[in-house]
Image (cartoon, rainbow, N blue to C red; front, side):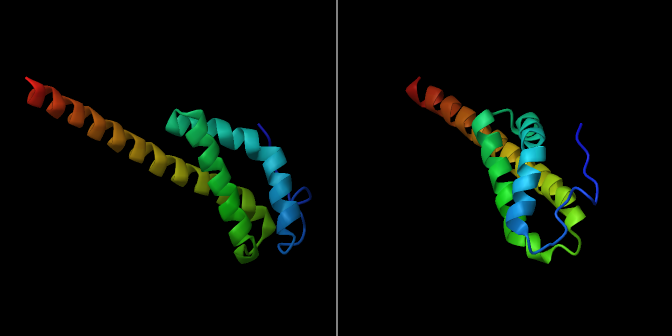
Length: 107
């Protein structure tokens, strides 16, 4: 498991390109694995990770300390993964109910 130290995180919170790029290289695969566990679908997991990194890029100037970027990224990924998983579960329930209703109507 990778860890991040203050020395490894880019020093300036205004250097979001470098910071986000570094975090993606260091933690992108870990984030993808976590997202896959949450959503059980590679394509959706990739979307979750992409959205988390895009959110980090957007909010980088708002971070009060650059070393908090990894925590923000992980929290964002978990939240986005949970939302995607819930949406997928609801969608499959709707499709299953629709199939059951369709089967009854055909009988």
